[in-house]
Image (cartoon, rainbow, N blue to C red; front, side, top):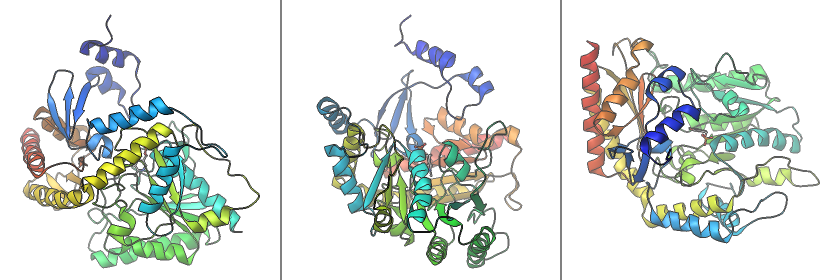
Length: 453
Ligand code: PLP
């Protein structure tokens, strides 16, 4: 049997691979789509069919696929030094250069970097850093953290516990519940009811303050927030919300941890969205995905002078990963950042992102589209049975999957998540590709609407 025929790849995968977030019955029926090649925003499957990937891999292929320059940088580093651990007191050129570059790009005094292997391990590291820093600062009881409903912060034991998306918590798995608390998502579509946006914001901030009082201000050490909740449904917070949450954190010596795994590296037209989009100076930023545009697995926990200074002294920091500061991954991230700078992709993402918002907003006229929301290159369509009551269609209709299947048949990939269809295309997407996404998605939604009536 030859392992490089398309048929064999699908069959081998079906026989041996357990995919992340898979559904056993549908996987055993349908198997996996085998993707063979990528270039820019396009993917080709094993039958040679082309798709425009409006998912951007998984919120991550920011500079687009198929860049020779990236392949060359990765190959050159692999040849020169494929691995060097960064434990205790050893380092390598790409890791040191990348930490300096991230300190330059991150807002304020976020001048220190702890490298990880991806987004989950960056959040997991920040979670540990909360208790460690607070203890170093003499606040030994501040080990509890607060996060929001509808958040996704990763899939390690700690990070899946910090997140709280419907459907992520399986009864068969154990989760950490002590010391992790949740408050409402800033969901202007589902949770606002008859309040104004300003009243909704007041209530969310009041709920945060009440939760801190309930747990104890001397016990809460950190607050985790994605600037825009990504996998929880592209939830854009009300005006001023993040700033006011950060002020509450300051008042109580609570670290504000911005999960910029999705929003970092250009998705909203900035290196980081916390400061440039929302005017918030976090104590810690966690990033991954767009840091290397998916060319290599890498993440980073970027933290402040204040945390760094407090940690100094005769003590160990017993946390880290074999592949932290991996020279090949760091070389890929450096080249990725160089490309974003040279091609002015932040500016392009902001411009084309506004156009993306505008073109998709037209879909709101469709009877099935309850809400079209998001910002710039982070967008989503929420399907409903009734636009007035916002009632959802029954789960068994699997509306998001039906829409994404109909789009896929027309050469467009959009990500289904329950009744949502989510989009996060590469930053290099053009206006005419945006037109294709909007038109194709409209056709797909109309087709599914016709099937359902
Ligand atoms: N944080 C956010 C906001 C994410 O969207 C994700 C993944 O989608 C993660 C963390 C986890 O990142 P990774 O899958 O690289 O571990």
